[in-house]
Length: 353
Ligand SMILES: Nc1ncnc2c1ncn2[C@@H]1O[C@H](COP(=O)(O)OP(=O)(O)OP(=O)(O)O)[C@@H](O)[C@H]1O
Image (cartoon, rainbow, N blue to C red; front, side, top):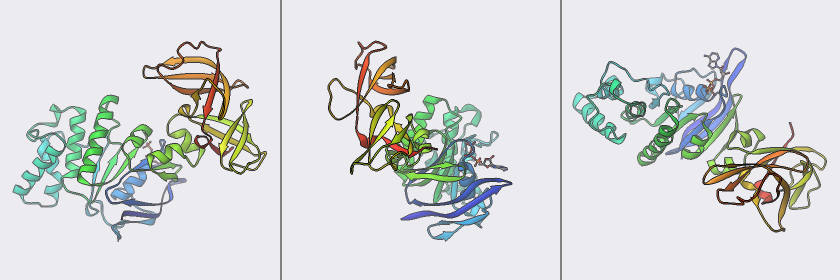
């Protein structure tokens, strides 16, 4: 069931098309992430949904009801900001109560709803404290409680974890996800952190220059990126330029890096220049022969504990990265020949720019 329908939404700032004719459907109970590099328009889109930025053209509907002309406070959204936006001179409880007071909820009900919201973010008993006495992670939990307490139809997250250190960020994203799932909330989450997006989202929209490049589940976005931009933006990959050969009914050979890769499907007309995306984990170290193989030489090994990153040189000198397990082929020295096996379905090809 569609919770949010966005149709042909556009917003320009002078000559910049910050949001450029975007259409999206978001389902009930979905955590939907807007992901993209700085300046791609994700914050502008989120703020248009929240009502902080006016819609220039297009429409936004919640449950079939058009809301884009309503003021922000009448849109039934809760927002969690990157900088927490906590009032420093009010207690934690007063901060969480803010939206309820603005909605003229009776005092007794406010107290019980604030307590419940603080409990949900694991801050039971913190109500009387001053925000100065809290850590960054706790402050962000207060901000989440403040957004939750009004029981909004849609929860909006604007890079909520960007101000936290790396470890806390990975812990907090699990909390956000568990809370969202437990309460069945519909949430839109803005981030430029691809790992965060992959880890917590039901679906991701990758944005570039105000337009959507791809909307899909994390698995499909990672495994089947529709454009070279998406392939490079999500996870690490080797981009190898090549020339397509003749499709044989199942695969297309691509001459690249002084060797040949086999790619599933008909990727381009014979002779057309293409760009291959070869994920480091798509190449497997192999002793024997058979299947789809490429030959390379080991240039450098980075031992990272559970895994290794091998830097290998293809026949024309192109360097690629390969992900190997920590205990694999530890006796190989730089210069050693490598036989790399792969599944043609795991290599994706794009028209060369
Ligand atoms: N108020 C404004 N006035 C002028 N230009 C703006 C304004 N707000 C955004 N822009 C421009 O619109 C484009 C999209 O900005 P937006 O903040 O939505 O991107 P973003 O993807 O959220 O980036 P970031 O991750 O850096 O916040 C950028 O080119 C930005 O400079």
